[in-house]
Length: 301
Image (cartoon, rainbow, N blue to C red; front, side, top):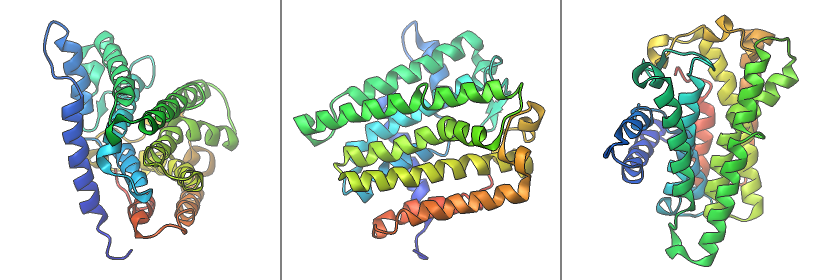
């Protein structure tokens, strides 16, 4: 594990995901090109590609091929990007910058930004439902159907959208730590868990493997959002590509706001350790997942 080069691994996987997104997402053409350009503006803004990378890593642990799950990995990134476009809108968080450049609605206007998010969501499910991998046989089709259901659940009221609503409603009232955790599990954690579940299911993993990877995802998702909350307090805006201190300005309910920075860091470490523990039964193929979890404690963006 000590010799695993996470930086090189992430760079290579990002490159592969970016190339696949170029293949799978439509080019700007026709009278509708404005909305396609707006969607591509955010999709190719240089994100971490964490969710597709987790999907690919889970498939590798389960013995699957990256080619078979790459469309699912790209669908995850499309859904994630749509959520960011909508999250930045004036009616939501009203942010001016994302990934170091103006947010989508600041460039294309609110109406086109909304439609660009809608386009990304629609294309994601179209891609996921299309035949890919394993020759399009009946087993592969069944797994694709499972993946569609997983992504829909993680994106909807019981997942990301539900978490976002709780986040918005919590700005105007007092909430306890259990509510904040409930919100984080859905707003951020659901799509991260979905990435691991989709990757392992599409690779044909046995239920025990899928369950272990989903448990890893639950702890990773909480650790990711908690460290994100910490970065909003302590982070460098230039490295993050967005302003710091926005959570406090908007009265967002976060772990640092409720518990303070020191206790929040302890909780983040605990979730990272528990995430790594869930991978004990796996061999070196799970090293990328172990390294990604540990990286959360030192990330700067």
